[in-house]
Amino acid sequence: MNPPTASDLSLVADQTQWFSEEVHPYDSQLRAYLRGSFPSVRDVEDVVQESYLRLWRRQLTAPIRSAKSFLYKVARHLAIDSLRHTRRSPFDDVADLARLSVLDPAPHAAEAACTNEELDLLLTAIESLPPRCREIVILRKLRGLSQKEIARHMGITARTVEVQGCKGLDRCEQFLRARGVTRNPLP
Image (cartoon, rainbow, N blue to C red; front, side, top):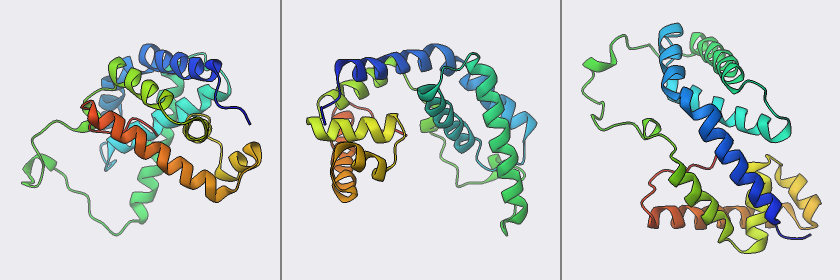
């Protein structure tokens, strides 16, 4: 199997630009909507991040006409699922999180928005990987293929996919950390 082509890397860049222009501008509005409409949801940040992941994966398979509409729809469904899970959960909700002394006053990592610079660094990190690692990371993380599908596609074992994928992600993480990115933007 051939390593990722320039068109694969172009796809990553195009998707990154699409996300930055069509999705990310609604970040704070989406959080406010979820907090206002679903105040019992324990972790709005998890709902937002999962919504982004599902939106990204869907966009890779078929273009989304209205990113905002799709994003809100996915987030709403995830929030409802979270509430259903909470009803079955034995943990008690805390009404006023501000009164808890365990909260860190530093800004949440999720609030530090995914900047174009970070996304460009991620693209550079992926491009710097050895060919097989790069192909596996692109197929696994950006195209959402399973390890078995990648193994079949590339003619290697699922274990090799797992090992190479982990090495690729570790190298990307080291690359990003060396450049000051403290969170991993890969899903």
